Length: 636
Image 1 (cartoon, helix red, strand yellow):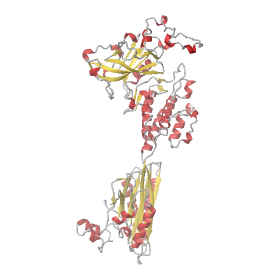
Image 2: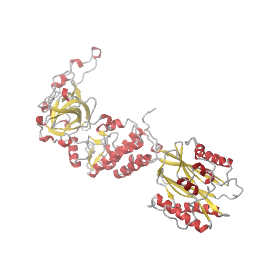
Image 3: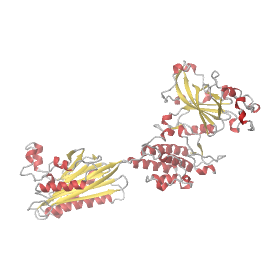
Image 4: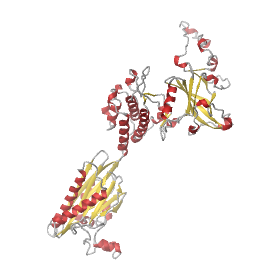
């Protein structure tokens, strides 16, 4: 028996019993202990205890940590909390020692501070002064009894001849009103596994606020849940590599700090070696009760049961009525159904499960980007312009739930007769045909986005040069993949970014007026009415070969939720200032009707006289992370 405040020396420590933590499977008793590490002058440790001084832990820092100055060990170093486990020297603790030797110095396993085998633990204990309120743990029967009755039973030298007295205590007899009840008493006998040598293992005490048990009852994001289960799967994979299998787990004996730490390995067994009896539990595969031979499929079930518990709480047993096809989380519904399948052969291997957990964690951690688009184009009100020489195009692709792409382009043609109309149409057609070739590749393109955009622009220039003479076109292109935007541009059509009630011109005006403003020869105000306002310095179709730097290719731009991208011909921005454009698209959030805003903008251009063709293409970016809270937690 072990009493509160009794103490014993284990290696470099004096361990004082603070509290019994109960008895786990395999009749292993757990105790919270205060550890006072002896100074070198007081260290008389027995080398048989198996202490590894390099693994002594000081990581516990709790508010009620014992004060070494008042602990009665003035010659010792500051105190820590520890976990002492006591069990049969031939039972699961010995099996854990064997596994720890095989695993070596593994970062995800909490190291042993000391271990020792003793024939009689009473010989090691230093008991406190007698106190009637002292709690006593009887290792023979797994009970706590009062000090008076325990004194005579405390590990006698000959336990076979000194069983606890079956004579009832007078205080325990029935009252007179219940005299008619027949009194029966049965002798107590020690269980077979409770005899023989004792093995004591000492580790640091898991921080209760960081245990898996505490973690399971607090809300976490879906990505955090998957990351934690993936870490445990990594530990299970390491067990499997050594031909051992985890068939269960104790959430109170696992810390989910960084990194995760395993404190109790008594639920890990040699693979393929049958147990003498089956086991049952919340995280144990149901078939293990009838066929207790550890295999990796049991580890997969344990992790699946834990994932289910983290997401939904309650029982993980499919026979309890859970319908997996009603779980409204794509991918995880299928994963859980297979992990918890009653047919062991159907379950994933641990390596497959680890890969799937990581893939799904990355999937749910990656923001989902969607695009809303709107467009409008008008020939304008000029009596000299009977054809719309503007062209535009749009292409979208969603390769997965989180990988989206969008390509948009606007071209403003120029030249006599129908040359401008043909030039802009050919340029837009070439852009999307060339880009489609990249998308049709069986593998992801190896070229960077900027190089692909440059090759598309050069192909458009070649096509325009061959299609028309004495004509050309502007061309403004944007490409966005996930949250990254890149632009390619030639001419004086414009690309704007609207963000946080501000407007930014992303493209450069390749015009004579823009050069004059940049050189300081005229002001921005003067450029509004300059006679050479529409004279371009760059366009597609004017040269067969484009010099390096001819095409403006931007650095990648990181998109934010609510960003609006505008592509427009000069017929729009010639009539509306940047401030006017910004006003048309406020507020730039989900309440804004994008199509209505585009139509209203073109209507305003017409109201201003619309002396040129006017085309506007608007793209609004929406970025959302998966929003999931475990359903078993009432967070209202």
